[in-house]
Image 1 (cartoon, protein in one colour):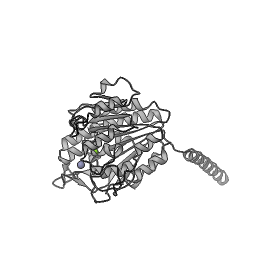
Image 2 (cartoon, helix red, strand yellow; image 1 turned 180 degrees about the vertical axis):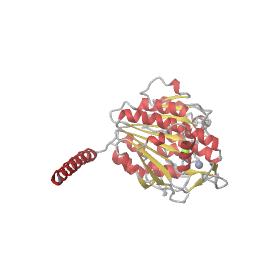
Image 3 (cartoon, protein in one colour; image 1 turned 90 degrees about the vertical axis):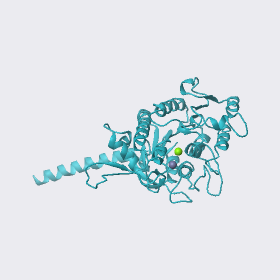
Image 4 (cartoon, protein in one colour; image 1 turned 180 degrees about the horizontal axis):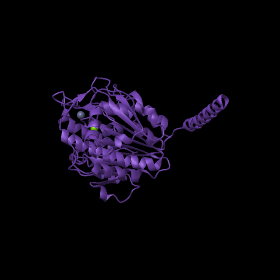
Length: 359
Ligand code: MG
Ligand code: ZN
């Protein structure tokens, strides 16, 4: 009796051991992704994500991610970063001085992950709900000493040789310029298709810029499902290259709502970002060859969720600043190599991990 039970324990142990060997072997296969999609919720700290979970009857897209971690956002110049330096750290992997875009603190332009991927032959795109010259998109597609130089940034974008899809706002920086240059006309001459609405796109293979308004788009929910739709269109246009694609999508106006300490608009912006995440995850689940990384450049508003009477019985949104805060921000990841984004990382480490995983 004793021998038999010992034997069966041994058999079970052997089975467990060999099955864990097999799954380990599978995990040891190189985790490489052909496509990379990075989503940035500007100003989206842990409380902003929880505000969505708290007010959503159904499971949110954030809860679909198998891995999560935290990113430390401070810049080279300040414990509290602005969007220019926070996005630059993600885009180029170097901390910089607040206000600087795509540059190290010594004012040297450093290639962004979008530019590195374009060099590798991937198609590239950017989708935002602000002006395409605003800090976060500019961090990926331009290099400038000051985020407020919108016209210089527009000029740099118009000269870009490797960018396939650009959707957002900011038309005035291309057409109502101090130097009177007609950048849109120049872009048409250089082979770009330029439109002011997404349905005008006829050729999915042409380099395409769609600027739907003079500056930023209107806030959620007034702008409807622009961001999820623009994201789906960008994926459709980029997902036809042998070498894969890189796409950066920004929930730009989460930050705007938080600067205004506007809880109702924050929830609308988070819902819009959530719908966009669901589109991206549905694609990545089907594709099985796409790394998806979601993070933020910093937290905005110093948001917390408390019972003002301290009784644990009700929840109220409390804002502690109209500016940014120093708290770390979440990182969510899905797809090949996604496990590399767990734990606490510096914002400059995100690009290192992405470049390791991307084929
Ligand atoms: Mg931004
Ligand atoms: Zn901000």
